[in-house]
Length: 389
Image 1: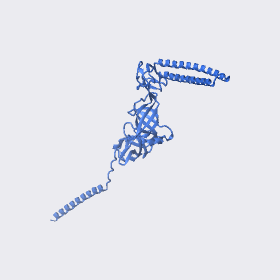
Image 2 (image 1 turned 30 degrees about the horizontal axis):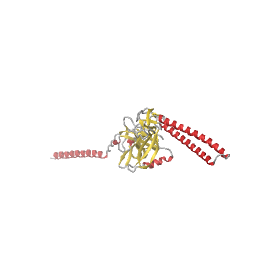
Image 3 (image 1 turned 90 degrees about the vertical axis):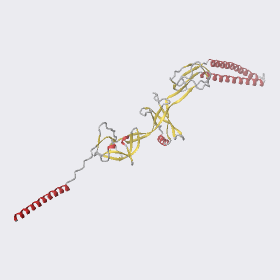
């Protein structure tokens, strides 16, 4: 009996020991898990994007419009008298100078009329000379009391009458010379002639509506364009310096510069129907880059932003709070920076506030970026700009 009791007691103590060891092991691992440090979260991978630096440069201020090229002057050359067109002395499409002979009308009737006026003047001049000699004789006879006062007065009246006749003849000669000059048709201005409107051999009249040819002055040449009426005050302020504003013309695609000129006219009223104001610019056109009737894109230069901060236009992003840009800080992380935008033209944005010259901004890939994310320059060409300090 005593042996069985001792065996039972040993088994109980053995089981109690196993339970205590198990509790100790569980407690050890529980305390270890409780006091163990949490692993640090993995950093977000760097984002690849196209980067560019903020530049500082002079940026012109333009107003944009669409214009039509017009001849500086246009003249329809017409005959100023009736007659047969003998010859044409120009070639269609030719450049002509002022005073250059263009055509000749049959001048024989006019030349005969001039000769007749000259002969009539010679006859009247001879009669006048004879009447003056008689007047001198009558004056001497009157002194000798050998003639009457009435005879002397009559002779003086005859001299005056013949003198007036001679002056009338001279006026008619001048008129005939002018008419004879009209028989030779000359260019009233320098320019380019168009198509010939009448052929030699035809009878031309001063009343003909079409004329002989049209001359357009294309060097210099003009461009007429419209801008919104609100631009008038900006233009007036820009003109206060007293200098004429520069104007640039481009092709319809807008990528090829055609000519540089100057503004010569701001119309004196705004069109109430369209709300626009008409302007005219003049251009030197020695190479004939501009042609009458041509449509062109026009840029009116009002001034410039001196040493302005610039970035490519895609850098500028827009959100609910306004415009912003992603700036890459010195530690390589992105920062969303609000910016003040002054203008965007020719894919270049002028920034008033929010950026500094030389800072790195994101040009492409903004959709992958969030504030605080590391950014690295992506593969391929990276946009760059010279920074002037």
